[in-house]
Length: 171
Image (cartoon, helix red, strand yellow):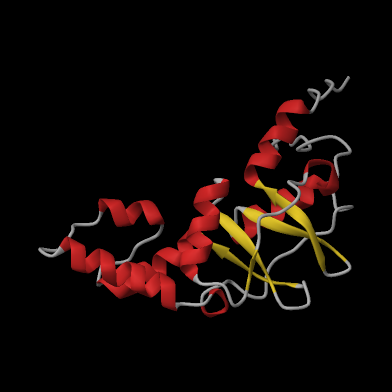
């Protein structure tokens, strides 16, 4: 017997659940700027825009962690939490200074994932979920005419699922 699938949310479009306005950063921003934005706004990633306001990439904590790992000599780090779990060298202050210097000197454009996966506000929410699953990403910039109008995240998908009515049994 095959698996029975149910839609994520009935007749819900990305624009119905988009988080807006999006917290974003420009390509010339530093990774330190990005970390401060993420911390201040409690987000784990940022859409990246160019000088014309077009979405040209996405920056995630994982992208930043790669730079921190390279600057400190740590083994492969998959996220910022791994930095806390990594063994600190015999000179922790020097290691932390190397990390901070790397964050302050590295521009977002050097690290961002590009080109970004984006989605339109009129797309079905199920499509957004499939793109996130298939590409192992946690957020999709929502664009209309190449302009950012917000971001749809995994949390937005969960909230839509909770608000969605239960499927009716088939006769």
